[in-house]
Length: 409
Image (cartoon, rainbow, N blue to C red; front, side, top):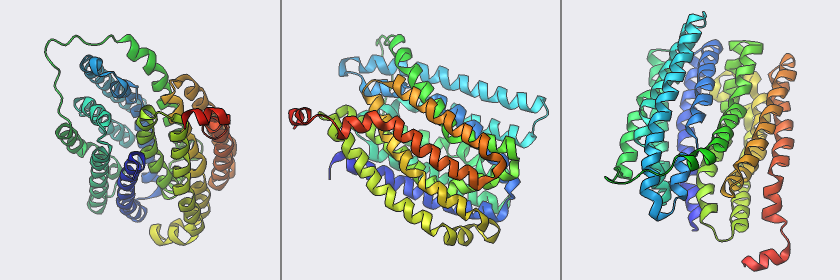
């Protein structure tokens, strides 16, 4: 089995295990928490995930792509940057929670945002190790660690929901399982800063990282801003229902897109024929995900009330529509990985902004017409904008002149 396929299967299996355990969380919270409680937790998660996207600043990718003779110096600078950045994010998120509390915001949302900030205290001690492990090709073991952490977190959420059915059950396990991740990645890949090593210059990190950082922030906005807008325009109860519909509909695809983005970048960087590698990634990914999400969309009217209860049966149409949005999402994920591997993060950033603004506008315009209208708009807008944004990658992979293909053959 080719390395790319085996690594994608490993991350896919990790994500499948995560979603299987997440299913228990969805069932538990649907029966034990009110839509308003779920909406409060969803608002905190969306805020936290947007801020957490700032950790994806391209520093780890500099380690993966570094030349052997510059690796130790690169790691030394990266380690220092990780600590400065993560501690700064902790302070920013804590300040946001305090500002919300002082301005009369929900005490529960403030508490949840503060709890989520605690993750930043564990991350910098293991991020260099993760990048080195990816560089060494240990993607399957990284997938196992990430999957194990999320499964443990989900099981904790179910247990907490049974004894303490409040919004915090969706938040607290993310902090409680952070030590598990840190210990596991440090055991997977040992690293200590070598004495006498002069750190690499910071400027290359900044010139590469600004666009990557912008991409990840906008990507997080693409995934989370519509939820915040639904909460602001329609209230926490509607947000709770929209959050559950997204989890039941797009969770499979979002997990697979995460796995694809992690595996595809090093695969493209290492490939002698990048067009063939991209073509393989696109066809394999779409071949796996498209039949699964189409079947999921067809079965939604049966499995939504079965899993969530009859009170949630009215969300079946929303879930069915959101399932289909997975197909353009996977296509764009592959295209974005190619742009980054080609050293075009600026192009990826512009395209991501274009997609994000279009989806946010869709939510604002269609919110008065209800969740089903928002879901249909999401499907149409994501299908059109993501396909247009992915066109350069599609052209590179499938429509190059024949003489260029023979050159690489």
